[in-house]
Image (tube, rainbow, N blue to C red; front, side, top):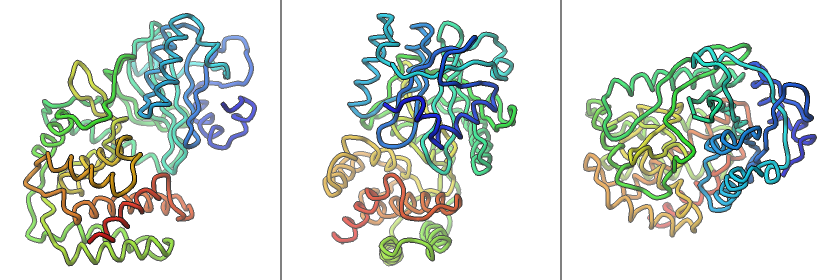
Length: 395
């Protein structure tokens, strides 16, 4: 566990701290009048931290709803934190602490005084943002806020608010989504605030369920764009993205994209129509409410992806698949895809798998380019390379 003194010297945490202060909060290493204690949970794979309120066991337990683990080790940490909180011993488990005071405009947005909060600093990336879980004094979750000072994040939050508003016009029956309550400046930061149906008992599935497929099928049916005469639209889209970053890509990735795009152009195949895709449809961006799927975090929603993109993204993100060797993972993804039919697209084909992996990889490279970062890769980039290489080798 990182010590608070080292935490306050960390540049990622410092930026998150500035965003919290822009909201009206003040975070300190030591107790001071009016400040409330927060336990620290640190991410293992990258720089990110959850700040969980410790003043009341109800707030601690419900505050932990923001920490939504998928892997077994993280689930153990959360379970231990909940058990010790119920015993009134949360401070003995979450020993490293910070202290937070102040109020924010969330009270005006939710029309309620004396709100409580838990915080997530966001994962270190070009689109990192602070997430705030808003609760009442009893710990009931009222909603969430996304907060950033990064100009690159501003259009993402505005796009998410617009997407949420659009989703509510579709009359979806297979899933629920948040409502955008506010999108604009709060103090010195940009914020998107939504409501939520999340509770401390909300669970995310780590397997593909019928509910996921039914939702994606309904979303596709209600957002499908008229078919074009040219079925090469996806290759044109991928080629355009590739050209934008090709000159500064590492050599191995240039060779990988060249071979993939050549193969896709020669293979042809039916990609299906363009539909609205979530863009980051993963277990941790979904949970179940009374057995109905709830889908949030729509900032990467995209209407230029083919039907099936979200389903493959979900499958490749599942821990039981991601933890296997590339060839075994691909075999399992194929097996699961063979059980699903969406718009008569054969998603099991190598061309469709390569199309998804190419789109996914170019998105992350494009994000790094926009941030002015060196293109050495991204978290998960090595795994994507293994999948592509495995498919290209087998063709």
